[in-house]
Image (cartoon, rainbow, N blue to C red):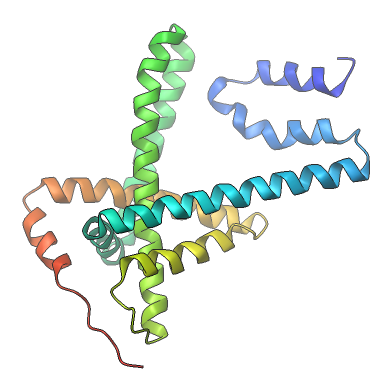
Length: 221
């Protein structure tokens, strides 16, 4: 308890493993409190640059996905537009399942090898669903932007994801409100990605794919 660094380390040990990330801002604030104004400014700039690079990387991955599989992106965007509340509910259920699994593992204290064997594939699946769902949400927003602007590029999945993703990432710069909106958008995105998997593998898969194959009308400027 002699320094802020030791206090941070002790505080993290007292928290459950699956809730430790919630206390990260407060713990970092405790370590920054003893720094000079210059050091605090430099640290804030580093965090800002890191967040911007992380967001741009996420947008780049979504753009690549939109190019590789535009049909699935358009299908997810269509399902999300038709029933956004259903996508939100499915996303909440998927998120709660992840939290319950984390709580169970925290209580059981399994060996590290077993925990890694279970969590690595699970987190990869959730990361895939979040990225693909984010591309679907961005596509829906970007398509509305193109439609309102009477853009000749209406129907381009790449540009729709680019426009919509840029708007979503800019929202993150709003303090507190932006993070809340992105969290809600993340739940909707997760639900949309899960719904697309069931639609494509279910009885409605052929009809949904045929609907996506029809390009939207191009508006003239």
